[in-house]
Length: 390
Image (cartoon, rainbow, N blue to C red; front, side):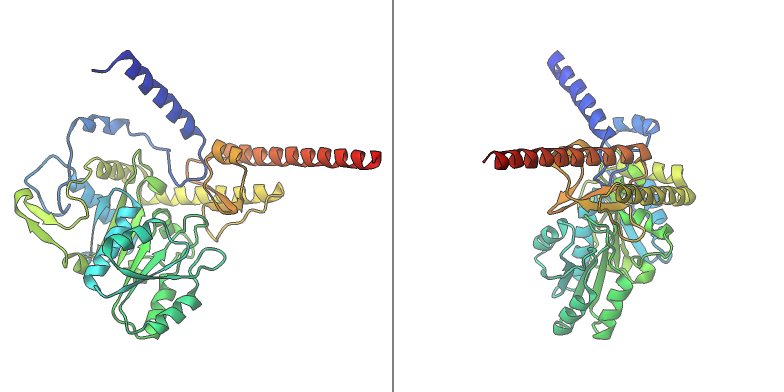
């Protein structure tokens, strides 16, 4: 039974989340959505059992809407009609696991190649699947080192190759070019190959960039994973994985008691997130996503220039929403929820970020630096006085 204390705890949680949501700049999550029209669907136990493109005897779900989401994203990724399949996942890690799972079934003796800037889920997923792997050096900007990749593939050219491409690394949003990767595979006549693109953040807006990054099916990908809660926007983590249909057919199994095919990672699947993504896609459309990308990129340029003007050594990869700068203090990191690794912190200019937030962050960084300079000057002055007295 819910008590008054329980109600107060819920109210306190709501207030804390409301406050925290107002000020996070270091993580790729969009919050500019309004889901009130979908709240009525929360009264149903929606479960998209099995394959979204195959009916199930359990009918309380949104598989028709899920199929529309998959078709929309497949079109963004320049997949040929009828050649790909996909489903709505719990997020990027599941999408990456699915791509590697298909690769293992296709190439059970394959070796996975990934850069040292890969997402932390990659090593975990490789461990789950029992795959062999080799880490490749990264360039200073976070992109894979193609020379190191070429040399490593040359040495291992007798083995099937599974390439895990970062299309937007976590800290610097560097993008591996799968056309270059494909050319290296061709150079060493490695025919047994599989290329997975982890486009968690960038997949939602990369189709609108000029020049367009090389990451999708027209460029040679076998599967692509995208997060739904990042560029599109969702109140809960979710994603979309798209793969070539001929690969998926290798792992499909008919499950009699659900009346569908087992083609996904999980059995029971969230029936609400496909509805959320469908709603966002209908709200925004292709042109809305294009405008969304252009606006975010314009603000990312402003953030980089604003920091440089303030004397902060900021930089970003071409056409990136991620602005990288020297590691900030723990106080600023906590206040603005800035992702930090080793000596770098970053700001990710998602579509909901405002110019006022960027200005406030920069002002905080400048003010803190002045305080440190003032403290250092005072310390030096005291030391000089003591030295003079001596």
